[in-house]
Image (cartoon, rainbow, N blue to C red):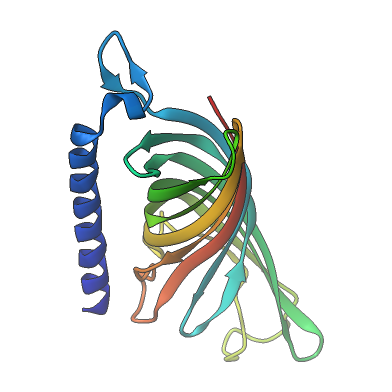
Length: 233
């Protein structure tokens, strides 16, 4: 029930934000934003973004798995009134984890995980100009993290029998194909950064709010920090 409530809140937030955006775009004077004069339509500012991400998957009954990876994609930023703007886009990420768990008699089990994701943010941003070419900004809002592929290889040096409670079987898990994890991770994020001319540096943190576990009643979530550079055209 808690997960359903959280998902419902996020869906309502998406709907509310989209409604506000539509109203803002209708009411914003065209002279205050970038405009295509031939069509009199508001034109978003397009940027290429790339950087480092550091997600972590955690939950009850399991140890945390920390990932390192990279992100690249394209964003579109729509100027609104009073230094506010709205950013969306599509970002592709590749992450990797190599976790080792020790056992008695100097044995260990290694978990190597590779994941591919898409992120679709919807972030409201407040921009504070410092000079004509320099500004700082802060942002917040939801994003949708979509799992494309996530595979884990488990290897072991254990010599226990399969009946031992500590025994971990070597195997390969395809988390989405085998319905171990949900593909959709609904997130709420906050962050900030600085922009000089067309160059932008920003950092943020996304908090996953829905349970990713599909195999039992245990909770499993994913959150993470990132830092990215972008060039705005």
